[in-house]
Image (cartoon, rainbow, N blue to C red):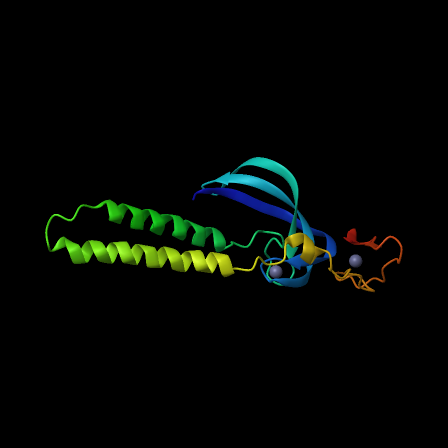
Amino acid sequence: MFTGRYRCCRRTVAYRGDYCLSCDCHTVSEQQRTLDIFHVYFLPLLPLGFRKHWHCTKCKNDPHARVQTSNGFKILGVIVFSAFAVLSWLIPMEQPDDVAVVWTMRIGGICVASVFAISVLVHKPSLTQQEKMGEIPRFAPENCLVCGEELDDRSRECVPCGIEYL
Ligand SMILES: [Zn+2]
Ligand SMILES: [Zn+2]
């Protein structure tokens, strides 16, 4: 792709205790404010303004980006192979040579669809994001991570840096 966005004037504005879905564990995430500029062929064209983004401090991803669930893929497998099995039962066998091939398709389709169906049924849904979020320990360091200044207990903000500890 030859279009994209530049993120410049990057500045950390806040930290908070968080749950990262990519790391699948508690983490500290960092909020950065950037000036986003849309570019085409690396030519900055359109300033999109200041945007704030949260990043996990461990993996640098968006901590709440949905991790791909494999169950949707399995359900698709059940549908596709069931349809395949049903269609193979409708194939007329005209030549004696067809018998082995068509029966392999019929039995194979049912077997593969069953394997997918069983794996969907035994799949335990993982904790929802809300359940995980409920037990996040608050991130409350004594000192600012950037300048080392002691933090005010009530405001939880480093005034010199302008960083909030949420
Ligand atoms: Zn992470
Ligand atoms: Zn500071």
